[in-house]
Length: 482
Ligand SMILES: [Zn+2]
Image (cartoon, rainbow, N blue to C red; front, top):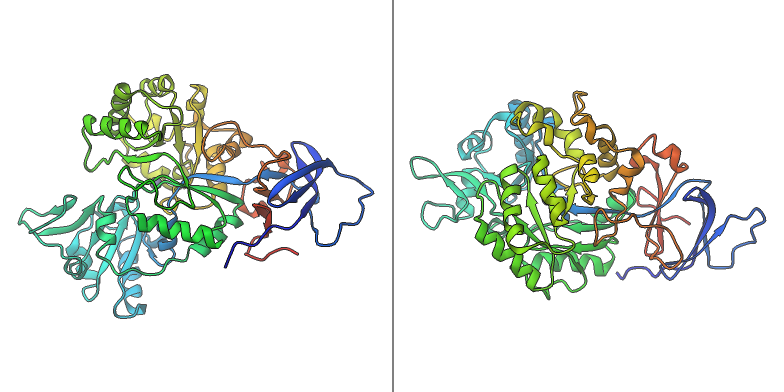
């Protein structure tokens, strides 16, 4: 299946920057933005007309940090986060139900685990729940998997030839905890088909017309899957990919190439020299870098590396979950961008209040103060590690409310318009000037059910009544309008 060719489309009576206009789209581009006319002439044959009824027409949202393959895989995984299973009993029940339902050859894949569910997990804990088939459980941070004994056996996990990142117990046997070993695991686990089409459709329903896949993959097969899905139209979004420093630059030619993704892994902190080499290498190759920094130590290491290499315009910090004022000043001085995930405050805020060192707590997931410091801030979901709905992130950026109702970082709240802009920056420039609807732009648009001022009072994906990507209009629930 090839992506359908966009015919002419007119969105009539839409609110664009406070004016009611008709927006005409041809061959995937906006060709006319004209004041709405009372005495509108009948549309020419073959022109699709969509009545906006005064709803706000925005540029399509761009999620600046997402993991598409993991999001597709999450759809066939057992969610075992604190809100999914409650505690240890619910966790065991969820795994056992999956075990009972799956065909014999399949693995149980569970995601979203956090220690508040049933403590730190190891191989033996999982064996006690599901002894008879391979099980793997991903920590919600994304960097750690825990496997049970059948899984350990299937992937050849033994004290000999253990990859670095596989933990050993005091008695010299593997604990089943695997840190930063996604690629290694991926080569040893039976492949299951991923439904990227469902991912693309879900994102369209949210008004998302573009994404940046921030996976540090070095496997060209992974990019091949994404490139194939984009070429076939299964993933209708504009897709920018990062990829790790070892990724062949020619791989996945159908995709746009973003920064090189570098991970400052908190479970195995790199030395500054290694980071300097990686950043300088990317810069030499004409690329920017996107450096994953979650903890303060991680950020300090990354900044020390940038002190050596200098920053290139477009270099970015992913997450920046802990930014003390002294580091904010250094981020400003280097001209770096921060790509943040506001929804983590809404989803995990109470855990942060309970677990995070009080010294770091006032500096968690900063947003408004980074903007005040002159730092460009882009918005993202980090799905599947956070909810894929960007509207939840936008709403969370305005309230900073935790699930229990506390406000985490009152001074970090954004007004709703500013929060929306986190997702309207250009794909290649998160936090840059929000895109605007004008003649000549690619017709990547998001139409809301209400005028903007109303919509901003009730931020929700339910507001999205249509999404236009490259001139093709879809309405939520996957139905194509007209
Ligand atoms: Zn991520």
